[in-house]
Image (cartoon, rainbow, N blue to C red; front, side, top):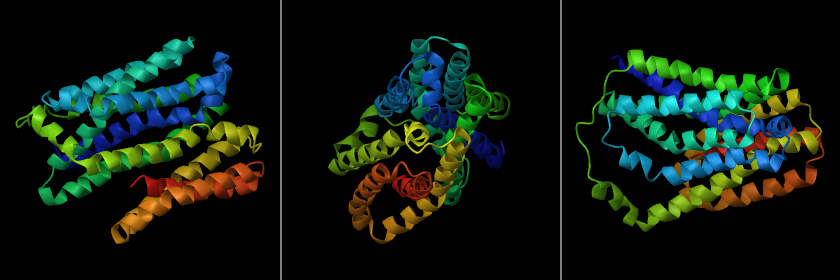
Amino acid sequence: MNSAKLVLILTIGVFGILNTEMGFMGLLPLIAQEYGISVAQAGLTVSLFALGIGISAPIMPLLLSGVNRKTMMLVVLGVFLVGNIVSIFTTDFNVLLAARVIPAIFHPIYCSLAFAVAAASVAPEDAPKAVSKVFIGVSAGMVLGVPVSSYLASTFSLPIAMSFFGIVNLITFLATIFMVPSMPVTERKSYGEQLSVLKKPVLWISMIGVILMNASIFGVFSYASDYLNNVSNMSWTVISLVLFVYGLANIPGSVIGGNLLSKMPLKTAVAYPIVLGLLYVIMATLGTNPIMMAAIILVWGVLGGIGAN
């Protein structure tokens, strides 16, 4: 198969997975209203999804590393698609949670496969470029997932927003069936070899740092739409636009972060949580001013992009 087409399918697939993950962050107040629960309870659709990823990420890709890659990608996409369909039609919040948690367990499998397959589909010197193209799917999921789902839910309905997630995953599922060749694993490392990397202390320090920084970004971002609506008194249309600006700001932030980390990695790693903490103090202080909040969200988006590095 043409490597460019394969990378494109993988990019759309990663977008669909990240879109399903991130899109719910803009829906929490509407989910609370739809199911007659609090926004905090609705937040379980995000926090339990993240917990599922966190638990499965070190385990699932390792356990399934010997399975045909096409087969595994279809399994993951199929699970996500079923979860999307259940989310559209269920009226039971507990069922909705199950439809979120189960796909989350499979999330790390597809993402790790997508990057590995993209790198292997081209010459070694072109591997970084292929991986960067797939990473566009990650960025697009973050940039478009929240504002588009928020707009669709507020303008039409919650099921319409959830249908958006399902359509993207369905397209990738069908493209994978008919266009992606079988990819059996020809060389497999033993579990011991793969687990040996866990002996390095720097890995654990880095993992803890990444977990805490991501929690500080996405933990707050999950409730951004509710905060902007109830504290900043923004309309849902404006909220969708502001969240879209946040996502766009991630892109230059990612570039800035890459440059900073290449020139002064230690200083950047130390300064980042301090700057982010100060921004949250400003956000809490000026949250009632919608104009100031829009500007703060822009800066926050840049910081979010830096943190993604």
